[in-house]
Image 1: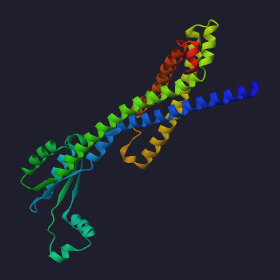
Image 2: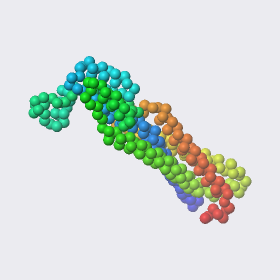
Image 3: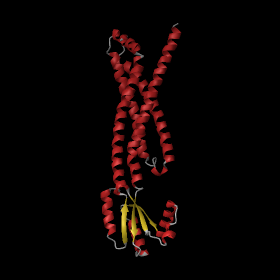
Image 4: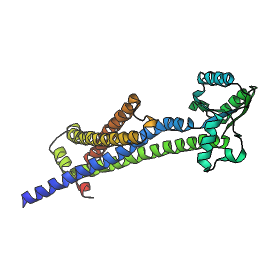
Length: 292
């Protein structure tokens, strides 16, 4: 009979430890993913900003040397990521493919202009910066027009700020939820051993001596959970980088290492603090209060 009860208690304890590790792993994984997302928000935002072109249309009277010189000058400018020349013939072929009709044959001439598609560095993709660049380029005598999608740039910057803010809010929220869930799981595991705690105290064991094995056990579970969470994060980061290699998500090794180290430290600290206060609570209870 006693053996059956011992087996039942052992299974119950293992189940309690498993639930602690599982819940801790899940919240640490979610927290880690949010942390990576927060730290990579700027990189993702910069990538999409740098896909917005500013197009310079040349007058038909513009000389080849003038267009080539401007392209070289822009290539060296601080605000330029790349500058690609598009001849009027290339533009005509592309537009014909897009509309499915040879408009040049219909009109009898090519009405398009030679142009430069300029892609800017992300720091300069704002309406204020672009307007200043447009004004400067428009003053050149051989430039017919400089255009960009002003509404797209405005919405892109506004949406990036909004998304960044809510990601940060979500990260803080889930950090609090993580602490509460892990604390709850630890308290349940300590609750299952409350009679053992009180028995040790009654035979003269000091509070520090009693707390030590519980804290060490919780810290080990925190380390295991953190390692499992980090493995999940690494797998997700690998597949995300494989799907979107242009974002270069794994290039900044120091940043990724900092997030991984942070998750490990959080897993240890939360389990350590939670187990300390959970054992302290039962150490301060009277024997009759253990049944309530």
